[in-house]
Length: 291
Image 1 (cartoon, rainbow, N blue to C red):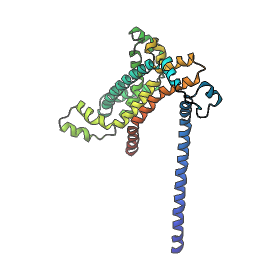
Image 2 (cartoon, rainbow, N blue to C red):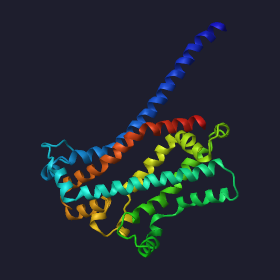
Image 3 (cartoon, rainbow, N blue to C red):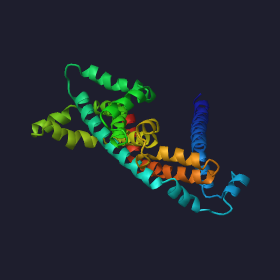
Image 4 (cartoon, helix red, strand yellow):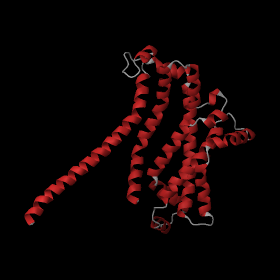
């Protein structure tokens, strides 16, 4: 019996090892396939942005026979991307900064303090996740018109803050609740005040989830079209989505120039994500450990 057991044990271990490798290989195949499916349209767009119109018509899925850099010059100059780019960056950065600042302050008091109406206030903020943007376009236009913000950057900054505040508070509050109370008790014994604890202790500890909130807010603001279309009429104040829509309408047959313009718009988002990637991974890892 001992000999049979000794003979079966290595076989069982080998079978388990094979199953583990097969399971891991299957997961890698799924993830790689998913990455290819999502990355291929971007690669295809960038590749065709360097083609001439004739080359694109004859060979839309191959490499460029001749690299045409003038597509980017035409897109930058003709589409007035420099102006739209500045508007998108200014509105997006200001809105993200204020959203994260107010969201972090609100989350700190909702997560670390106990007061009457705390759950009601938190539910009020979370309710904002259920409000569709398109349902507020007409009321928002009337409101901005009455206070004189139409055709100003503030007409976009305020709605962006309002509609991104809910997801920011949801992420930060959930993360801050996991911190032990002893951290604040030790800081209070050392003479630190409420806001000192927030700026010096709580906020640095939330950097991973702050990175996630910043990326979500930035992408939402960068790609937003509806509010910009309704609240901005001045061409000098339009953002990139509006500029690209106008450029596509004026050059409906020049697909390579359109792809060059789209590539220019896509680059900042990719660079911003790569810059914040480390913080996002840390946030996901810490969240998994805490869970």
